[in-house]
View (cartoon, rainbow, N blue to C red):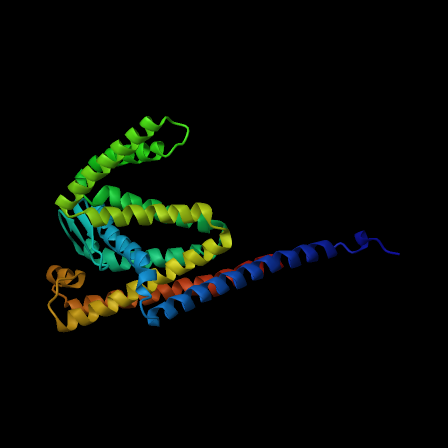
Length: 309
């Protein structure tokens, strides 16, 4: 009878086998969630009144679009006057100056964010961080830019109102103290709402805070498998919304004189807005294609090859 020591290559072979299986399983799982997210997105496009379900995601995409303009303005040395989000999914970012980088950042920034989500969503151990990070990003965009440089003045009273309202819900406090905290928190919220209505930013604050808090809660509370589907769904929505908006931008640029990012680029460069819309659309398609190639061909093949060695 021979001992296993007589076969020195047996153990490395088993280790290589066990290393390949998780890579293949992870690839199959990632592909399954991506396919499900894509099918769900396409089905929602044709289902009547499905926009009610995708409405929060549309708002999220708008925040990313307008936030990309704002961040590009800061990187260019300009300050952001204000960032407004509208209930119909449109938005507007006013900056102290503009260049080609700021004008291009909206659509390309949204597409880049979408493909980054898509790429990292294939790692189940990253989905919680992606959801929490996306929520924090929306909260920061809201706090930093909705009221421009005056946005920080909203943070302290908003935090104080939240603390008072949460404190008033504690059952171990005397009833008078609870009612007092709830009343004070309610008055602060009312005053902040009046201020936001006066400045035309109430909807932007409500949308930003609700979306940000919801994404953070999903990242903390959902199981990794469900979280992976949510992040894939969010990524697919970002990518398809960006491509759909670019297609709409092309037709608007070709047949109308509507104010748009492409029209701004045309004024700055002298190149027709239609050309810019085409360039952004092609860039978006290339970004998505390269990302899908990296997910389902280059990375899995490289990992399997290294495991076999």
